[in-house]
Length: 435
View 1 (cartoon, helix red, strand yellow):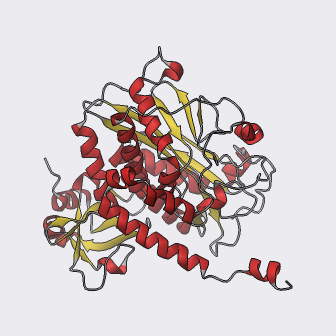
View 2 (cartoon, rainbow, N blue to C red):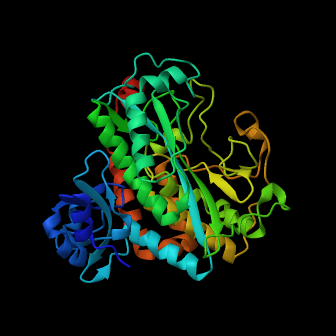
View 3 (cartoon, helix red, strand yellow):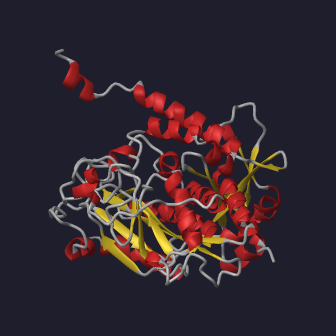
């Protein structure tokens, strides 16, 4: 039964709804709708001009309507009179094929038709920085090895505990929080869930973290590499596939190597096969490639991959299999679109299962120290342009995730790259002025 948002508002004391959708560049767009108007909005959607956001549209396009999905509604724990609800984009009565949440829902349905229910969990890292964005917010957070620093995490207790309390209140199953490997960096974990639910939670989490940081006079950033020399913001994704009743993990086979079943190996094979092209989605900004191709950081390791390799419980590879029935994709970063992350994983994995893709040999070495010994593994793209070209050449993946989406994404991302290339930098003056 579909939840009646007007009744929900009356029951929970909601005054306003944020009807929210995420555009191609992971921008979160919303309209603030009074509860008295939500019944009509639930039926027809809130109107937007698609061209005014990062979608491949023009000012001549008809209205885009964001139709709220009541199953996603969340009452803001820090402002109880407001509720957030994820929306599906419609235009002239049809789903907008390029809209990220629509892309994901299509792939979730495709997996269900094939008897699979993809479940995921994300590890969304972020920095707490000064309001002007110039430096980390804690002047005492200077340790060479800051990961898990108990003093540093307690100096930000008010922010971290408030966010965690809200996740517990929302029933997300929050289970740990820590200071991460960079000075000023944190990670907060909650339980895995169905891919669409994880994407909605991921989207809301970013909104919540930024909001609570602002409440405390700080700023939160998920930027992949905000500070030179410090470990970047990853968004590792743990993946498992279950049967449609959600009770049997079809990736799990304790008799198999690493506890990963034949289906799990084929799904992983799809990830490995498409790794260089899916980087255009998992690492979607110019700055992303300062993280995955970074030199050694002050802590001693970047904790990010630069080569298409997989392993057992070893964090120096692109994919690790930490235990039976799941694997961790360590490629995505903090800029990744929550919906497109899930969509591209499903698209590549389903392709792998259909074609019985082989992930290739695993490597158990320390890739940071001995990666040069692996001669046959592809390098990940060196920059956004290389990733976009790899994605554009991958006809199978483009078709799997959606031809219309792929065309729109490539068009706008190419424009972003061109804009970057036309930007004049201080580095150019420093290295070229006296030639």
